Length: 219
Image 1 (spheres, rainbow, N blue to C red):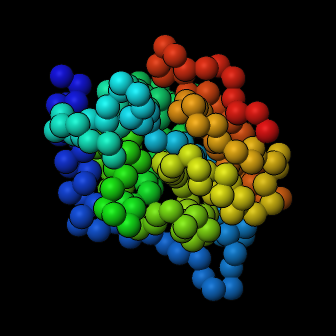
Image 2 (cartoon, helix red, strand yellow):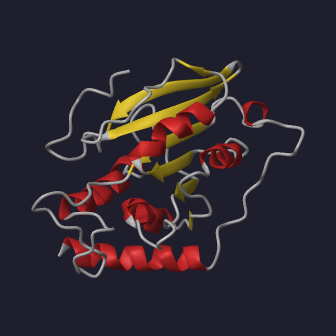
């Protein structure tokens, strides 16, 4: 059963998170995020997988119903994202990269909201990476300061309402990212690539599940 397989990966990743995030470099007080990343550095931003809606319940890693977790389709997306960003052979699709660091939003004030961590769990397990969950809703600017001080490539998984806030925190971005992320889209990767003049923004459709759309998010 898919959820049973994912439970092993999620347990390992959450254990690594509990032990503390991996040490990462930070920007010095005199440097902003625009001048600490080397040209070519890539930051990929995704939304978590599908959430409970209507007759589709959330299911935790142990197979129990949980409104804070992914649906069965969301777990399938998590598995396919691992294949997308860490193919069994060859390199990821053009515009994407195998992450060297993974960030997922921490639990909310009620200790709920596991979907971001669940979405990246299979990929983190495959890559042997601890997921950094030091940042949560409201920490988007600090998060961007952190990831733009790292060599990358980096993956961020977040709730869709704050994804435009993450995009706005990158300095000197062209073209301008969309101001909103639609509630019904779970299938797009936003990428920010460091250039000599700032950060280049692009969108790529995931195309990992049959229902995924081939277009991207309109501005």
